[in-house]
Image (cartoon, rainbow, N blue to C red; front, side, top):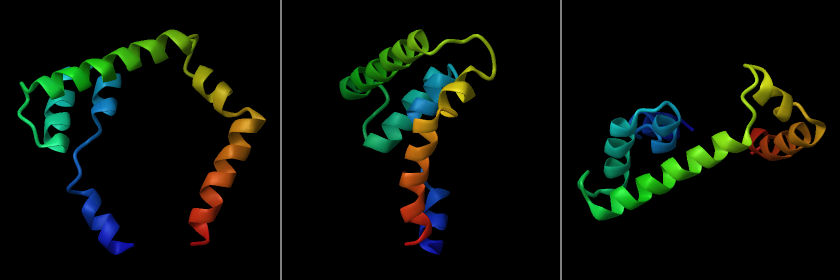
Length: 93
């Protein structure tokens, strides 16, 4: 467990995280670091454009009526049961 905790400090932030926050340059840097490619690589540009398109698609689907709109969807019974079923085995391993 300690090895994983130490390793987390060396992982870059997710390009998806930066894209959701509108920080495209940081997302490109993070993606190039993860893939081991230069920032202006064709592969990085293609993958980053896919991430951006996916983010725009998700924003179009999720209603943005307020801060609690995401929590309302999460708090449905199915979501909570799924979360418990996914996390419980990790707790006992």
